Image 1 (cartoon, rainbow, N blue to C red):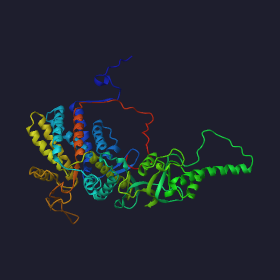
Image 2: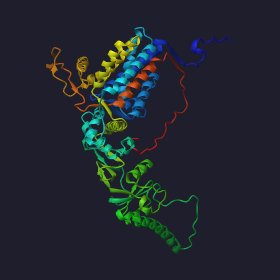
Image 3: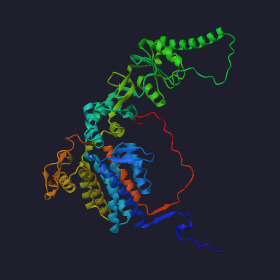
Image 4: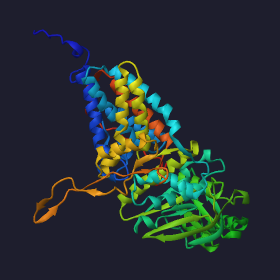
Length: 576
């Protein structure tokens, strides 16, 4: 019998197929390469001129977007180090709702510069300590760069200015239209204490057709379905809401009815009809019909009930989603009933107009409140394709989350790369005075911050070196709000000789970079968003640098695939 030779190293403890990487070259550099490769794919989607990515997920659904959060979510990246950065972006998305791309680009830039320092002889621990020290200094400097504080969040014009930057990065050229829509919706639903603003009160209804410029805001709710009965509209209406089907209930136990003659059969049918009519008549006579009632139910409407609802001129609307039913009750001020009954007047809702409208080729029921304020507002988004509408929805989502963040903390910073350059300048001078080896890491932190304005300039087709040089010159001169001007682009110049291709002159043209006062042009960044992005990116980079071993157990194979969690609300197309 042959003897088994004992394995050495980690092979003694792990199953066959396990992998193990150790040391700076194998573990740290592998992680850094993975993270920088991830960021290189996302960097081109940064800024107003960011390119779209076409992503097809595991169920073959197509996404065409430049939203980093959506791209990273649908790619389902498995590399453990890259997952750390993705978790940081998920936290940024959850807390602020924007600046996710900033976290990825900054964290990867920090790791890329860390790789150079490690190759020069520094240890990963020293680099991580220097980065953390630089981040603390950056968070100290950041409050001094606040240029404005959003005080009046119920002023449409001001809110529109604050939201434009968040929308421009997702929907360039449509920022004014979308900013108007979101500002109107947010101001309409903002409570007296703006700190209690709820994102769930802004609903979205997506209807294919026409263009983005025909999108509009309704003070109320819009459902993509028609009315059940003949009554198609009601004005100044009282509304009764039921959480049960509007139909005859079935008994829990089976019963038998013995009918001996034709008269008993007629009386049995009449008894059922009269019972239903009494219930509907009680609703109509209870004050509901005073203002042409609307009955909303969570289940199907029975034919017999529908007949009598039409007879008493009561509009019938069916909602299949319990979440939509709750939101409608919040919108109209109704108390939902668990069974069919005639509710008291104080339990009824009220709406100025309930009507079935045709938008494009879609029938929708609109609950519209003709007032300046309301509990819930719905943005109807139009577009030529589903992917286009989905991308506009993401821009709306970012803008609404920006408004929510402003309600919590109204501080604003100068945008267009102005804050990053000012922070880089300050941290560079701080690093020059720092003792010890950490000064090299602190200086590299400043260089990593330059990556963000550099990406904006690069995606806008501007020469990056000249742009950064001009920005630094302005900031050294004391213009702290100087940012990149992607609109003017300066004067064209031709640094290369003219080439002839197919009898046409091909002239390679670049542009002298232009800078502008970002505050004067109403380009703002959220203070809370920028602060959290710097903190999360630094923490992610430091965590990855402190990993010196990667131990991967053998992956389990075979067996049925696990099912994901079922959607809570299949018909819910709004923002959660």
